[in-house]
Image 1 (cartoon, one colour):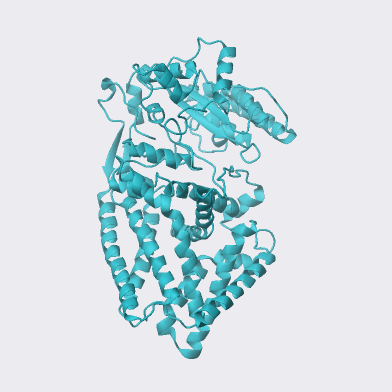
Image 2: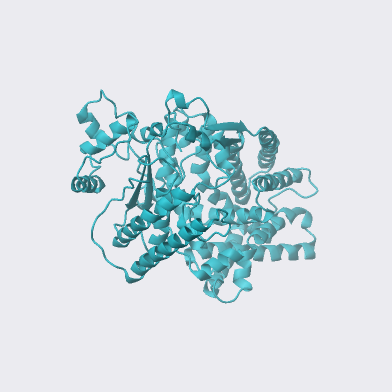
Length: 634
């Protein structure tokens, strides 16, 4: 995704994509930003003036004000994504008008690490799909990187290679666009027709079933295969809908996980030149002569591969390059390749490339170019988010902090702000914990934290709350999603703020002081039938670890107690004018987290919140309210 390939002059006559600014969206976004900024400024003025008129601001007021400042700062950073939204129109058919030998070579890397969490059959469907991409023969190579060194993955690769000998000719012969066999055979909208096609389709379907069977049998039996192999196809050797189009109007979207193409020069830099000292080159790239030769060939748009090398020599060179010690005393991970020192090497690498002046392009065709597997379990989703946020916060705490490193580099101010927002996202945990506990504690102790409903300043708070939600709703609806998506995003954002952002930021701080080492744990991509049923029905599965459930259930329980106490106070003393803001805040938190209430009190069987977690959370909530009330009374 980093910077388009520079093609020969004769290929630059017609553009392969056009960038069209979304003027209407830009006007809406900037108008909203202006009015919201005025409202936030008024809120800050109200808080400061109230502090000046009080002899000694209370601790709850200071904590709530600090939370409002953090939320306002993060909101300000997030507006960079909305400043210049664009759409991009692509013309892949124009590639067909050019000479195929002038197209650049493409390497597709498919990474896996644990066959138990990443089923080999799913990985091999990706391999087969990549090998069947519509690209000139000899220009496309597919590589599988297995960090776990699993014999099962090796066996599945052999089976995939054998199936590809039939699948690739079938795709080329009939112009099959759905190159993933699993998806292709699960669809019913096939419109090619014809007797010959149907006969060939049935034959290839049987071969795919045989391929599936062989891989599944290997998974079940755990066959141990100890050989090493490299797969190179010589015949045919793969939060987003708002933020990425917004960055596309700036310097381009950041690297994120997978599904992107990068120019080789972006990864290697300018070290591979004719005039460079060979000794210096090897200090950068390591002692492999074949690697240096291949980079020289790619720099000269020469697609020739290592066919002149004997297979035994090629395998030996591959083992040498893949060894854990190859990169020692080189610049790999520092100036060459993906950068180290962060568990989100994609974000870190993209930041540095944009700081060097590279540009990226967001390509999002109507027909998805890539499809991946996302987590469907609450536990996996929140812990995966914790790992990601630990990584981006690591960058914040380093010398590469976007707000500092970005501003002194060649990256634009708005692009820097986009990176800064993502790296500072873990800070959402602080105001979320505060606003889910302090106003509720004060509500039970009759301490108002917000203006009276009859006070004109109450309109400022109401405007900020309502308009921020309307703006989010507008973004959701503009991308073609239903209104329920808005509610689900609010719900997941709050859950991530409490769990993912909290754990991620704590781990990053501990790592900064050398008290904890960040690690990478592959996300479980195996979904059992029961979990799939929960997911398809839109029901939360609360079969999660206590460290994930207890904080969420505790905060919901705390707000249930606070809401009940607040309503009782209004009925008995009639203090709704002073305490309405805090009562509404508790009600809103309970409404958004209704699935947790349902899991605690209404659901039976699997997927409910364990009673032990509910009792533990109740005890913590009561202890917090009692202890907090004692502090407020003193």
